Image 1: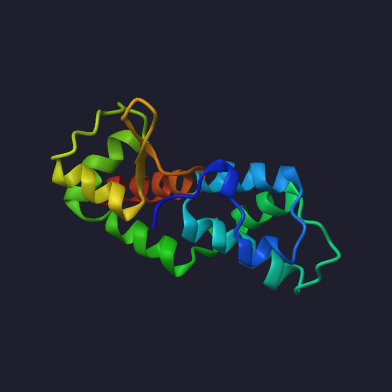
Image 2: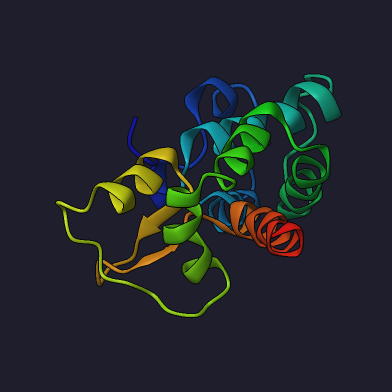
Length: 153
């Protein structure tokens, strides 16, 4: 499934019943860069877990910020699975320079290693087809994991 665009950031399953302020959509975009599983995790955590389906409370940007921090600290299975992939030498070789800011590389279509990290959702291409972290949530976690891996090796 392709990433959501900025205009379709909040899933219909949540947005039809829940009021999301513009700031919530902005912060959902900032934390997720449109990755569907992360957008859904943010919205689900807020609507179902935090607000207990109380549709009278509009979701604001502050809700998204707190929830993103919760997901980072909690390390949901999907995030943990992605972080485990960073231990693979091929994944680390492509991801580490981007995450630590050493360089941003062009992404040729035929490059299997780069295609693999894009498919995993660890990295994404920017408008100039250069690699960058897929989103701030993944960047923060990947930086933490990569620093620990470097200490172990």
